[in-house]
Image 1 (cartoon, rainbow, N blue to C red):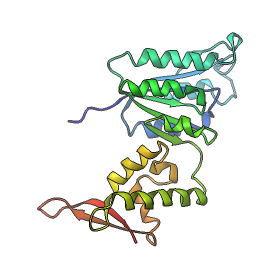
Image 2 (image 1 turned 180 degrees about the horizontal axis):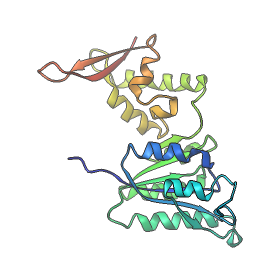
Image 3 (image 1 turned 90 degrees about the horizontal axis):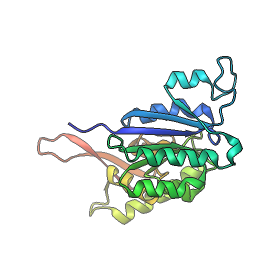
Length: 232
């Protein structure tokens, strides 16, 4: 039986909107069990019972998030330093194998590289303002903005076509599962969800004029369970 990932998620509440919290937890529940949930900010009046601010008490109670107080008077990078400390303390715990950071702050890039170098999966959730070098440092980076515009689909289509041409088999096909792995190695933000699809198979089916997609059998009993793609 496959071991379920144990996840710790950290929210940089000074950098990312609270409207994304629901999406983050919906995504993480498909990746494993979230056992550490912390948010960081100078909370002031945010957690008062009648607060109307986005990062409020009700949101924390709904998702069982532990709010960590960061006093802003200690400096403008106080929140970043406190998040960094929390993550470094967490990776020393044996029961955690995946770190999720919800922030678009490029200053975390060195921290991400350090965590990844110690063998942890590190998932990033951020908005479009996140710098590319920051996104690429993650194992996986998920863009929290709405579905990408058409011109950005055109960009990934070119990347996909080139990747297939570079890695195709003698019959011109490539396993979609391998395609997805190579795309993510090229750029951590190259995951299907960032292009409005739940999987690369689903994404490719939207472009049947460009790609030929089919299932092939990899078992002697004839089960058709492997998806392949080729450029038309």
